[in-house]
Structure formats: structure tokens, C-alpha cells
Image (cartoon, rainbow, N blue to C red; front, side):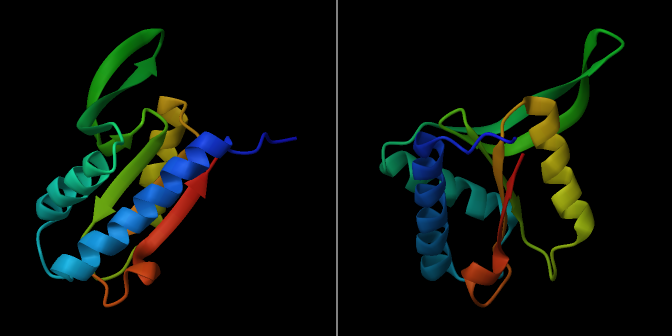
Length: 129
């Protein structure tokens, strides 16, 4: 049986979604991913959440920790990964990327957020292990 996501992590998740709505309603679609990353990190920090940007994620291979160039766009409260996109359409490869990051990191919850949509609710995907 899979354990439920802790309530504290779900609380962080709600704040992430709410902050994404705020950033998108303020800026709209059409900007660079880096702009949304900075603004979302700022909005989450303003809410009192701990946010790390561009966190290196190593791969453990043959007992060795190797830098494969993976970077988490945002890590919020050391429990939720946020992967940002500015694309025409989210593809299966984008979801696979987030799932890989969850597996490699040991975190259980992540969001894939595509800011290049008219309605942000259509650009948010929640994935949990």
C-alpha cells in the first residue's frame, strides 16, 4: 500500500498552485521560463516558504554519485519539486522528466507547470510517487 502524501506537503502544494495562479494572472503567457522561475520563487518566498532554484540532482551509478547535469527548477520546502515549462503543449517526455527527478531525488511530489497557456489550470500537472 502506498503511503499518502503528508498533510504538510499537501499544504505546500496548495501554496505552489496558488502562487502559480498569481504569477500567471499577473504576467500572462509568452515570457521566458527563467522569468516565471524568478517570479514564482519570489511569490513563494513572500509566502514564507523556503525555495531553492536550479538545484543540482546527481545520479547514483555503480555506487558513485555522478553529476549528469540534472537541475530541479525549484525545490520548495525541501519536499516538492516544481519543473517549469513554456511550451505549446506538455508532452509525455515532460512528465517522464519530472518522474525521473522524483525517483532520483527520493521526493514524492512534484508539479509540472506550463505557463504558456491561456488558463493556468490547464498548464498544471501534479505527479506523486
